[in-house]
Length: 346
Image (cartoon, rainbow, N blue to C red):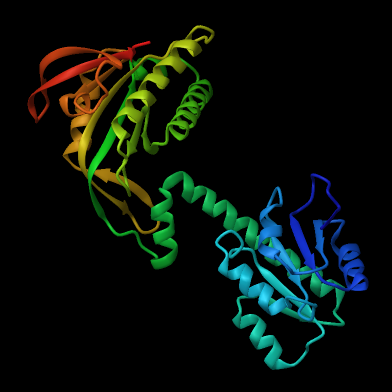
């Protein structure tokens, strides 16, 4: 495999797969000023080779007539591999009959160019496909920030996300103490910068702990664990997530010009998930478990984690410092015994 034109200001990466040195030279010279160009002189093990790249190509230019695996078979393999199936393929070949072109397009290629070709037409079609690929990646990144992976997959397949009921999901709510007062006293740009920095750190913690952010509601952060599949240690993961939140803020507050305090509430139980809206998707989690977790957070002391008995009962015995807060009144839910989880016992 050969890599050419590897400057950082390229518009994208194009992989040329051709056994002809002459054809390779023509295409590389045509594209190298705008794109990083990679070259394969054979389609053998193409999926495995592409998987080893540091970054997947934005487009593959594929010859048809090659020894060993021909372009048609290579395209079929690329389309059947989950890692490479979304990479657009353009055939560039001497096979100029309609049947050959139809076969290539049926296999999933986005375009079919016959040799000898017009260089400007090739450049224009490459530019179009690379730009489309880049826009799709931006869209997928945006969706990944809005929806869980399972919901994105279902949305791609069917155009909708079916509501689901899950029996054992751990919900965390965190909320900043005195946020309204602080927000009225600091510049807007500074406030947004602070929120962005804190919530980005929370996102990193959530990812590390194997739980999932559901949404931000102003200064509130909601996370869940156990959606889509049962997680045996989901409760412990979420409590550790909350402890990491507190530890991060404690260290940050020591060197920050502003002090942020938070309350954290956690409950576990049954929830319903689904996507609300048709033009602006909002993935959400509903149910009594969510309502209880939110109300538990409201009763929590600043910089503490407050949990229900259902959460306490699933934590490993002797691993956490837990204090019984007694039966506290939850708005609209009556009295419920709550517990304060302070730290891991070393």
